[in-house]
Every structure is written in structure tokens, then in C-alpha cells.
Image (cartoon, rainbow, N blue to C red; front, side, top):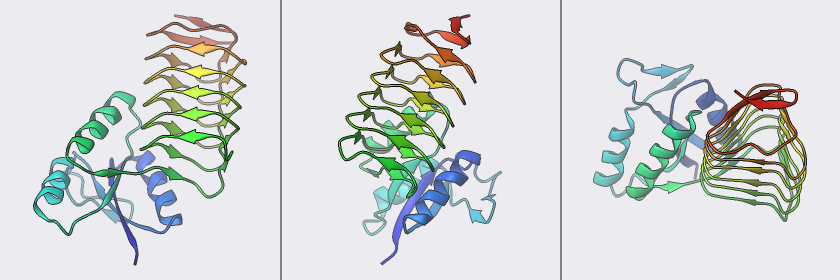
Length: 209
């Protein structure tokens, strides 16, 4: 029997999440708060808003869809995941078949791991994260909940990335460096020193702005 998956968020990011889901054998249905002004994303119809999805799950005991949130904004993704959990949805983790995940790595609920990612031994990835295309998360890294590691980021061993932080495309982070909560690391940055909470930093080496 085909597995059913509701995807909350119909954007470019949602397209890639849907592609991963279908590769893993799911039939997907999109829900987006822009509905009904937005009715399709590519060939996939949008079936309603997030609120509509919650009503279906509450009113129809046979509904039983798993769910994943495909929203790039960390704060909004957090809010939607918390809302769905409060309404008893089964939030799943999606891992692209081409990703290389150590048997000793840990990945929490609601995270999506994209094509070509490497997550090495004893790395820990929190809930609701995005580990985007081609990113490398080396041994003993800790990525806290609702962070976004963008495409082609390289995190050397023992790096810590705080909750809701965003590490921009192509950035590199030196081993044992910590990035705080709610940080934004600009694209192509080289992070050589610890970054405190709530900071925007970019450049090579990255400095706070």
C-alpha cells in the first residue's frame, strides 16, 4: 500500500521535499496557507491550508497521513511543526537515498536531509532541521533544532550550530567552532571563531555586522 504524506509549504523548497518523498515511496499532498489563491505547485495540486489539514485529521479517523513541513524560514517552520504536533500529527524525517549517514549519527524528528549530504559519525541533528544539498556535517557536530544548513556547506568536526540558525550556501566552519542561536551566516563565509547568539556574520573570515 502506498504511503501518504502531507507536505505543508508549497514553494521551491517544497518541490524538492516532494521529490525526496516520492523517491521514498510516498504519495504526496500539498497544503499551503496561500490556498485558494494558489492552487498548484508544478503538477501537484494544493489541497487546502494548514488549518484545513488539521480539520481533516481531527474529523476523519481514516485520514492518517504522515506530515513534513517544507518551509525554509526557520521560525515559521518551528511554528508549523509545533502546531501539527499539538494536533497529533505523525511528523516524519525524510532522507534522500543518495545521502550518506553514519550508523552512529542521530537525526531527530521532522528533519529533511537532501541529496548528496554526508553526516558522519556521532554527529547529532536536531528536530525540524534542513540539511540541504551536498552539505557535509562532520564527526561530533551538533546541529540544534530548526537550523538550516544550506547547500554545499562544510562543517568540520565538532562544530555546534544553535537553534534556528542559518548557515548560508557554500560556507565553511572550522572545527570546534560554535555558532549561537538565531544566527545568520552569509553565503560563502569562512567561520573561524565562535559566533554568539542573535548575530549576522559574513565574510572570509566571517565577522559580525
